[in-house]
Image 1: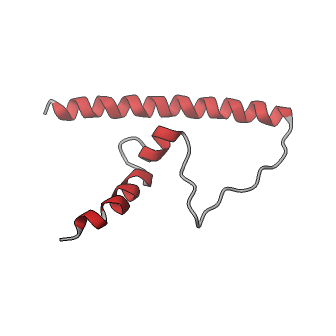
Image 2 (image 1 turned 120 degrees about the horizontal axis):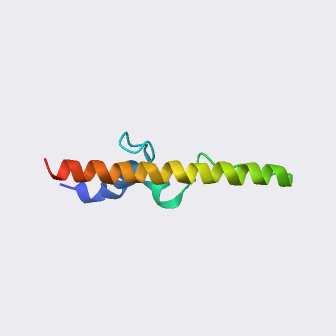
Length: 84
């Protein structure tokens, strides 16, 4: 009878796991990054060369493109499921 005490934890678990429909977690789809968890701190920043920045920028653009396609596919699947 205390389900409401576990709701936040259950929602967090759902939001940070990778979903088979999109291949991404809902958290990633909203924030374009995975969450930083206490037991998995982000590594310290390392100085990088300008060419590395260009490569990283282009890789990020490809990632955003894939994410956009995954979001569109998820919407299309939802529309199909709603009409069943």
